[in-house]
Amino acid sequence: MDRLKAVLNAMNIKYDKTMESRFVSYMEGILRWNEKINMTAITDPDEFITKHFVDSIICVEMKQVRDAVNVIDIGTGGGFPGIPLAIIFPEKKFVLVDSVKKRLNIIEELCAEVGIKNATVIHARAEDLANKKECRAQYDLCVSRAVANLATLSEYCLPFVRKGGFFLAYKGTGAEAELMEAENAISLLGGKLESIYEPPEEILPYFSLSHKILFIKKIKDTPSKYPRKAGVPSKEPLK
Image 1 (cartoon, rainbow, N blue to C red):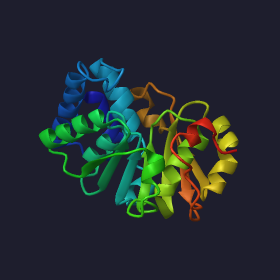
Image 2 (cartoon, rainbow, N blue to C red):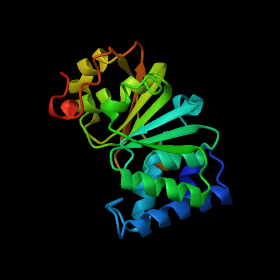
Image 3 (cartoon, one colour):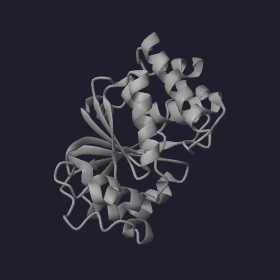
């Protein structure tokens, strides 16, 4: 966990024994369950720390993240980035959404074991959940590391964000090109790019990925016709 500790220290996040215990226990739990159910393709602990934990938390020093109270993670998979962020920010409320119930059951069980009390799970497709009154435009922050093009991901995520809130898309080296293709879709959905975040130089030695985070601000309500029916955003991305 030295790599994770060094990254958090560089970002002025207090790293204590409780936090370390939760990170270690959650990783061990995911890897244990992974022998029965596909939770992650990454099974080496060092690689797990870098690609799941460090990658998930590189945004923690940003004001948009620090100011958020209610956070939703769309397509959480094995709980990323939602669970690492929930461990670091126990005062915030996190909702983790995925369409695979078995994974969510494991996340819920591990949170109870580890002592993560500020994360809940919802089994649903984003397209269906975003049309529910209790979820639509209710969150300060939406995060997602889901594998989808940015236009599709924006249609999944922006409906959950309140005006003035943010959608954070974790992307790779092709982020700028993807953004150009999705620019009109983002505007249609009520969003506008505010910034592109890259890991600061002081943590680059601990970070083996070339990820960037797109900070998309919700500047107007998403039209009621979005998101479209389940399956459509991925098959027919907005242009």
